[in-house]
Length: 388
Image 1: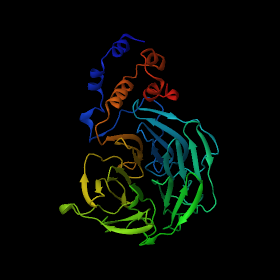
Image 2: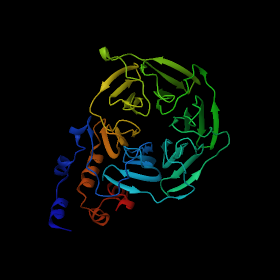
Image 3: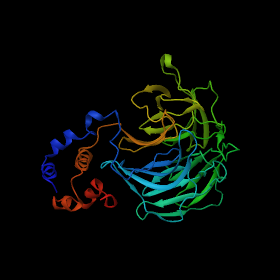
Image 4: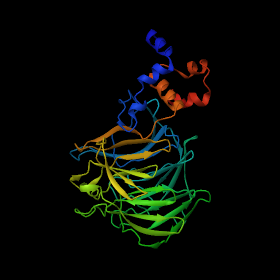
C-alpha cells in the first residue's frame, strides 16, 4: 500500500468526518456521489428497488433500456446491490427460481427478504407475471411463493409492506385492462387474500405509488394510462387497515401554487409523517420535474426543492434512519441513466458518520480493519464481504 494510503490510515476520526460529504452540512440536501469506477448497473428505467432497513443497501432488480431514437430496446433480469457507505455496486450471483419479467414490477424488503411481484417483459403487455418471488438476501436464493388466490398477472401496480406483516398490492394493468382491486399477502402464512373494503374505492390505475403511514395506506397519483391533463392531486385515497375502509381525503393547497399536477411514473416515499413525491409524467410529452411534500397530519401540500433528476420511471426508497436513495430512470434528455442521488433527512448518528468516513477513504482492506480491532459486524458495514 502506498505512502498516501498509509497517511490516510493515520488520520483522526475528526479529520475524516470533515472530509465526508454525508456530514451534517449535507442534511436536507440531495447529493449525487461520484460514479463508482466499476460495477454500476447499465442505464435503465422501469426497474424495481427497495432499501434495507438500516439504509445502507439499495437493491435493484430488472429494468428497461431504450435509446432516445427508440431503436435499441433491452429488458434486464439482474439483481444489484448499492452499498451507500462505500459507494460501490455489486451484481448479486443469485440461484434458484428467478423472475423472468423485467419491467414495472413492485419490490419490498422485509427483514432480509427481497419480495418482487408482477411485471412485464419486452414488448410490454405480451408476457405478464402474477407471481410473487422472494430472494433471501443472505443466501441470494430466489423462490416463488404461494400462487393460490393471487392477483391476475399485471404490471405497474403498487406493493407496500404494512405494519401487520402483510404485503398490500393495488391496481396495475395487463396492457388492456386497468385494475382497481386490492390484495393482501400474509408473509407468515404465505397466503393471498383479495380485500374488499367498504368506502369509496380508488378508480383503476397503474404506475401510481402507495405509502404506509402508521396503519394507513395512502395512494398517490397514477393513470389509465395517463391522468386527465387538467387534473391535480387535490385528494388522495387512504385505505384504513384497522377499519377496513377506503376513504377519499381532500388535501389542502400550498398558497398560490395550489396543488401538484396529477402524474404517473413518479416516486413517493415516507419521511416520518410526510410523503415526498418526485417527478413523473402528466402526458407522454409533459414531464413533471418538481418535488412536493404532503404532511399527512394536516393533509397539506408544500413545494420542496433541490431534486431535479431524473424525470420519470426512476425508483426511490427511504429507510427509518432518514436515508432516501433514488436510482436510474429517464432524464429530461430522454436518456436512460444509472445515477444515484441520496437525501439525508436528519443528522446521522456518530457511529454512522464514522462508518461512512472510513468507507469513503477506500484505502482499507478487511484484514487491516480487523488489525485495528474493529468487530466483524462493523467491518461488514464498512466493506461488505462480496465488495472486498
